[in-house]
Structure formats: C-alpha cells, structure tokens
Length: 348
Image (cartoon, rainbow, N blue to C red):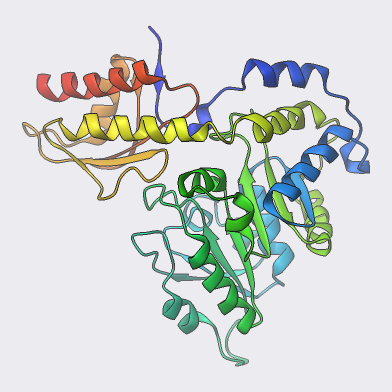
C-alpha cells in the first residue's frame, strides 16, 4: 500500500536530481571554509534573500538559536509571539543556552504581532528590567494556519524596530511558500529583517539543512555560535548540493503544493463533522477540527484509523488536525486522503 504522508512537509524525500548532485558534489572541510559546494549554497541563498552573507546550518532550530544569540547579549530580551515556532517547538534553547529572556505577546489570527503590542512590550531604560534587543517574526506562520505575512507588514515592523534601535529576525522556515503565495520574491519579504532563516528540508525537498542570512558582521558572529552549538560540519557539500538543487528548481513548484492543499480543503469541507479553520488554506497547510461525530472527536484515535487506510495525518490537539502537502503528495494522494476521512468518520 502506498502511504500518503500528510503529517508535515519535513517528510519529503530528496528528488533523483538531488541524489545525483549529492553523489557528485565537490567537497572540502567546511569548518575551514573550504567546501566549495557549501560556499556556493551560501552565496546563492544570500543573493536570493537579499543579504550580504549566509551560513549553512543543520536545522532551522539551530539557525534561529544562532540568530537570537548573535543579536542578543546574556540577559537581553526578545519579543516574540505566543504561537511562534521558536517559543513553542525549539526547546527553549534561547533561554537555556543563550540566557535570553522571552517577552511573549499574542499572535493575531493572521500570524502578525499587533504593532501597538510590540511598542508596549519594549522596555524602558530601567535597571530593574531586561534590555529589549530583538523582535522575531515567523513567515509563513505555522500555528496560524500557514498564513503568510505581507511585505508591507514586515516593513512596518522593521521601521518600528529601527526607531527603537532594535533588531528584527525572521523565522522564514517556509518563506518561499509565502513568496510564491503572494507572487513576490523572498528577497522582498525579507528586506526589512536584519536576519532570516529558511529551511531547505521542508517544501524544497532537500534531505537536511537550513540557511541563516544577514550582514557579513552578523554572520561572522553566528558562525562562531554555530561552532559553540556543535554545528560545525566537515565535508558538508554532500548535503549542501541538494540545497542548491532545492533553490534552483524547487521554489516555483511550491504553487503545486498550494493548489493541492486547496483541493484537499475543498474535499474535506464536504465531510460531515469536519470544520476547517477560516481562510484555510493560505499556503500548503490545512487545519481542521472534528466536531462530535457519532460521539467520536478524538483526533489521535481518528489518526490511527486513517493510518490503517495508508493515510498519515498530524493531530495537533484533542480534536484538531494539521495536514501538509508537499512534493510527494499528488492528486491521487489528495483524493485518497479525502476518501479515507469519509470512510473512517462514516463507519464510526
């Protein structure tokens, strides 16, 4: 049975072209800065994001952590959303390893942080309080349904940050999804940010890795922090080669994932007992909730029953699901997922 895996776009496998590039990649010692494939990936990434320099890191979590630690001193404070990936899913690394204090403000339903909330979170110059140093945004925003933040909004946050002499970091794990959805470049979305991370291993299908982009001075600091965090890699060109293919050939096809997410959402709207979040899908994520259906509302149990049908989905709450489309989900897989939901819920 062919598995339809909608748990996340992190499950996407490298393409045949990536595997060939990995096998043939020229390599060197990246800790010495001598891996030509890593260097080329960093150059491409910096250009695409409109930044001076870039750093290849093993994961988006490490990229965000290195960014926060490079921007902040011990005891400084970062303003971020209460639904942000950095706060919820990165094990508190910025506090544990960076001694950086989080100041949480509510994410709005569209993934943004209200500008007045940001202003009110900025600390006065008071010896009793930590120093506000950094604002973090997320684009696309995972917990807010995969919605993308606009260039206009990010520009407004960037202007606010500069006015108060703060830095702005963007967790752009899926920034290329945001760019494709809006029909603009990732460079335009990232322009107001002092630093930005993006993942190669989600919708772009590379097997591993993320890239952190910013000024040369910033990346120099982040490079040292990457070493401190154990992220120094040697002949990393083998995996960087897949990242180059991802950036050169996988960005534009993200529109296909968005179209299939729409197809999936449309099909699930007709299944009794399923309620989609308003506006879904924005990009490649479908969030939905099951209402009491013949007394059945346990998402984990339903996920188990779907797995028996060969369809894997993510349960993100007692009665809530997240389904994510990616390169290896075709139209047939979408239709199978819709039919499997119907079978499981009707049978129960």
